[in-house]
Structures are given as structure tokens and as C-alpha cells.
Image 1 (cartoon, rainbow, N blue to C red):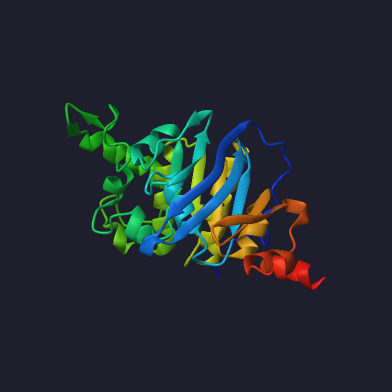
Image 2: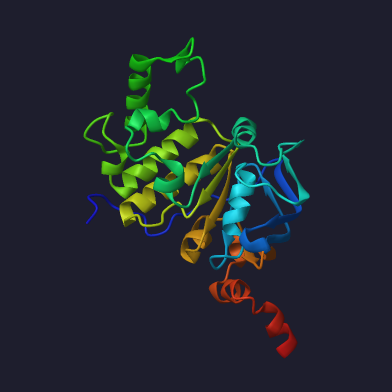
Length: 273
């Protein structure tokens, strides 16, 4: 149906994670209307592993992603990334530290639909000497660079100047990943990275995330698709009420147990026993 054979389930080769890359300790974040979105949340990620966050929408996943990518300040707690404290609410600081972001809504927060592919690829690199000189963009060089990225990530488009809003959802997501991966991130924060994509595009996104892991990069995968989390993650963290309430290794993952933690039933189950 998609013109090629699709792997039914991606098998990640076993590997030993590397150095500690991210440590989040007792993080408190306020959301709208004065409620606590994150309530003493702690987690850690090592180099070369995919850590999945499973949970029902509205339990702090959005705020966790926004804090780590510099979009949202935190009230209390500490974040240490690659051995250094992460600055509070600094998008540029997160980018310079080596954190890339695939947001939940690619067309609202990740891409500018009315602009062409090259302009969207330039959003994080237009200040660099390769992309601009004396304050002016290197138009010819940037188009050639953009074409190379489009070909490398197999973005299907009528032309390099085509408005991004005219691309299919799968090609929009591949363009977004091309931009984020091109920056050689140490950590990719991917929020619902395959939401709304067909089976072929989904497999392509999974392949790119697995490739980052193989290159000793880390991925924080936030998804409401439990199959996706279980298929790709080395460790699974379950979030409920703004806290991590369970951690399971890949071999321990069980849909029923994870589902109970996602629903906040773990405590009630223990009391019933």
C-alpha cells in the first residue's frame, strides 16, 4: 500500500548506555490557572538511549518538553545537562547546549507553512557563517544546502521553494527532523513524532530516531501511543499528575501494568491487596 515493505516491529539492538546526559531533579512547573503541571518530577537520561514517557494527555508531558527546550520557566528544582546547569527558559541556551525539539504540533510550533523549505531549514542556523555573511543570507549556497538535506531525508516536494503547507504531513515531519538532526543534537525531545502520519511515514520517523540512538545520541520520546513507546524505548517512564510514577526497562514492559499506572490506579491496587 505504501510502495515498499514496512517492518512490523522495529527491533533495537541491545546496547549499554553511555555517560549521564540529563538529570532532572524535583522539578516544579506552574501551568495555566495556577495549577501545578509538574510536581516534583525527576528523571535521568544517558547517552545512547531512548527513554519513552507514557501517559494520558494533560499530566505534564507538554510542560516537561517545553521546560527542557527553553520554552517554559520552572519554579523549583534543578536541571543538569551534559554536566552543566541548564538555564531557565532560554531557547537559544537549549539549542546551544545541544537539545533539539520535535514539537507536538509541527505546523503551529515547528514550521512556518507559508514559507518554503529552505527558509524553514534556516530557522536555527541563519546566524552561522555558512548560512549568512555580513548579515545577509547566502541565497545560492543555502538553496544547494537545502536541496542536499531534502534528498538526504527523502522529503518529497515539487521544489525547494514550495510552501511547506503544501507538503503531506509525512514530508513536513521529515523536513522538521532534517532541520533538528542537522544540528547534531545530544538530545532529541520528540513529542508525538508520528501523530497523524501514515504507516510508511511513521516507519521513516522511527528509523531516524533509532539512528540517533545508534550514533550515541539520546531521545526523550513523549507519546500517547503506547505501542510506539514500547517498541522504541530502552526505558519507559510513566507520568501521572506531574510526576514519574513508574519506570520499567524494555524487557519488563507490560501493557496492563503501564496502563494502570497511566490511569493512576497503582496506589488503589496496592490498597485493595
